[in-house]
Image (cartoon, rainbow, N blue to C red; front, side):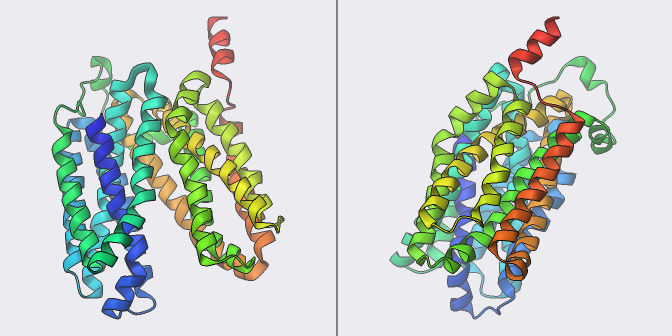
Amino acid sequence: MRGLYFAAAAMMAGVSSVFALLAELEHRYALGPGSLGWIAGTAFLAALCVQLTLARYADRGYGMLLLRVGLGLSVVGLLWFAAATELWQFIVARAMLGASVGIVVPAARRAIVVTAGVDLGRRLGTFYAAYLSGFVFGPPLAGLLTTIADVRLPFVVLGLVVALSATSLRGLRVDEPLGEEESEQPRSGVLRRLLRSRTMIAALLVVMAFRYSVGAFEPMWAVFFDELGASTMLITISMTLFALPMLVVARWAGGVTDRNGARFVSMSAAAITAPAMMSYGVIGVIWIIILISILHGIMEALLNPGSQVAIAEAAPKRDTASAQGLAEAAGSVAAGVGAFAAAPSLAAWGAEWAWAAAGAVMALLLAISYVLDPPRHKRTKAAASAS
């Protein structure tokens, strides 16, 4: 699996470098004020489309092909960013990067689910740590390479790194055969089949609550800190302090999921995250807010593998990639709604009510999930089954 982890980290380093260099691209190529929204929005749409349409083919024996196509799209998108000079070219290149993530992640998770055995949470936690490491360290690397030459160099270097990572996938068992009884089930209507399960819907709602909070967090955090009088450097440090604990504890978080049960861990972590978000607008001391955000980040590290394992457990094994793609698509929609709602809420109501609203939406989704499938600790569940 190390090759898969390396490929995920390299791909996300390339994707996150775009976030760090958008302002530089805007200045260099005189892009209009609304152009950055088009570039970012296209990636979201491309990822959503491939998650709903292509993820299922990883369950049908094309997992390795999807991984190679996804990484190939990432390479082409990054190199196109280096060569692009006009807005439409940047939009197409960004769509390729968004599609690459939407193709690679479900296929990669399927490979982990069908080979991990009892170590599933830890394996998914390690994958998340690799994925997150690329996202955390990609922007500073891109900034360093930009100072060495210009804004095109990071895209060339990271494109070559992603191409190199594709060679590390040899020997990966992505297309592991499934049980005979599962292979006899019809392949059509997979999304409808998954959505008929109360357990699946409950697991999806946790993913949506988690991703809604991420979507709301992104546009509000820097503006909120700026209103509190924080410098740009302090805002950057606060983001790093939020993300780094997630990277450090991700593998441990997967082990916690294995020992205590996916539904129990993901719901418990989400139940702590919601009031943490509500508290940001009430507290006026920056360093206390940062300390709470570190706890928030650790809870999200528990939420990520826990929610993914819950999705895997709610789906038939033959529909593993389809279920992960459905979860990613639902999460993408929730994150988009959270992002679009957060900024107007902050402007109209102020920080206290905007953060409270974001936490309240998260709490509502979790409450519905609880009603559909009340979580139980793994030991309690095992005892009940034995009884």
